[in-house]
Image 1 (tube, helix red, strand yellow):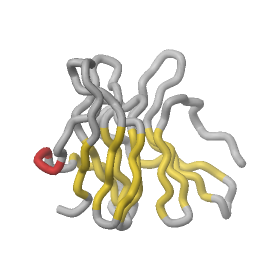
Image 2 (tube, one colour):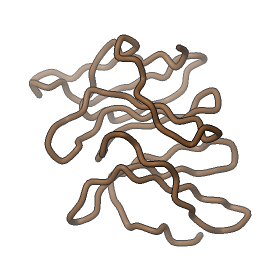
Image 3 (cartoon, rainbow, N blue to C red):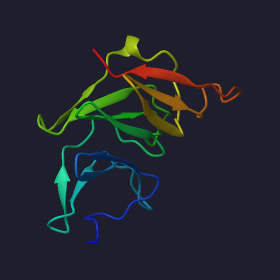
Length: 139
């Protein structure tokens, strides 16, 4: 497999069709909002659209031709937001806030269940309690 353009750790990944997406993360100096997409047939990575928020240790999933990312740390605070990207549109947009029933910062797992994306793990802002919640994938 070809090397990515940028080395990074604690990134998120998601499969969309035959494409592998690498989202956010950080290197030794910087938190990132950049994305890269791996084309297996061409054995190469290409740059994708940047997320609206830098995210380290967030969670991601793919559902209904879109990629979702939630939670994580942006270098100054834990995020209580989620974003959605349809690769055909080529841009990230914030998921409506009321669809997030529970804020997870950071979420540790995100997986698909029918028409819902569930998040598990993470911590609330006060760091005292662990919780889990769901983010609806349908608008």
